[in-house]
Picture 1 (tube, rainbow, N blue to C red):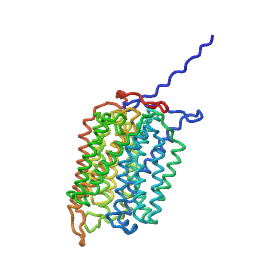
Picture 2 (tube, one colour):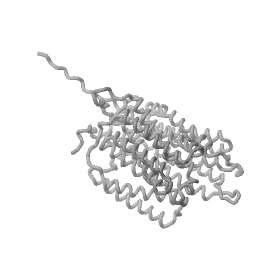
Picture 3 (cartoon, rainbow, N blue to C red):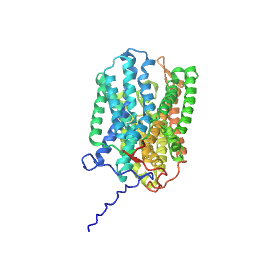
Length: 510
């Protein structure tokens, strides 16, 4: 009698960050081998960089938008604000939808929105279509947390650390590389070419995702929390609108104060709802875990510290040399000085992963923010030559690369695989909240501390030094906050999350 031997059950490798192990990669249709790891990482990182380019895409043409769109400057500013608000709303929503209905599916939806928004902007010559297009571009911001989540589900343990570090850092890489590229296009071509270029890059990303990125089988199932989605969207819009437009409307104006009060009331009610509904948009109990909560708080400070550099260095490079501290360079030169920081962020991804494996992601984060603080201190002392700013941008970029690279590791080691996209989306939102706050704070400082040149009020040298000092302070605050993250030791030493295992597709709750 023949006895059939049972094939050994596949046991997926442990998550290198101490969290729940990723499931075995699903085979491709037709029984083929899983997609190549390098292709998946490259495609997802490229998609993240393309989406992050949207944040700096219009910066070179912001001063010209009133003339280009035949609208007041106060109205054309919505071309920037609308993208910020849309990104804040879409990031956690897309993350939750990815956990429920498929991360690759939502990734494709996000990239399609990016392409559609770019085409709308490219065809625009008036304000309203431009704002609509920029909103659509902002809705694509969920690409980065979705990409991190796909990596957790599909990559082998030995590749996960460096890959997620690169994906997380793409938020800064795209911004740093996008400024000189956008300035180059704006200086030499019609401004519509900016958006045709972004549409073309989006199409390339879309095709690559279709060809190389698999769909994850890890799903949560259940129903989408529509009430929670509407409440969170309303609260975030009120909060970020007050922060981003407060300087224009007046911080003590009825509009700004009203939005602030509305944000507190709406978000409080939203939190009450999320704690009581069976299938919340954001699981606040998971978010309240010490490691997740402290990491998200540190993310706000890191986002603030990163963006302060983007506000100060380009302005100092472009201010007239007659001020005694400006260097009188063009937007293109200013962008080229910032570009190396993006390359440094890219290069630090594997280093960040190696430190996280050896010492734990908490240590990586703390090292990163100390480097950022040192970079700001260096900038206060070195402000007179172009190479000074290139050096400072690279130092701060290295620190941001460490910080951003460690955050997905900290989040993933504290949440089950079925909640990875939603948790990373919330973390990305916290960084965006930090950058929005940095813009508002720096704007107030630079507007209040001015000097006169030819009848025009320009930010003074001391104003820039104060902003740099505040950036350093934010980095040091992130260091203090990060010190409260539970110590894990090496990245492989953590214990699995005490949660139910994620359900594969096809076994979701009915």
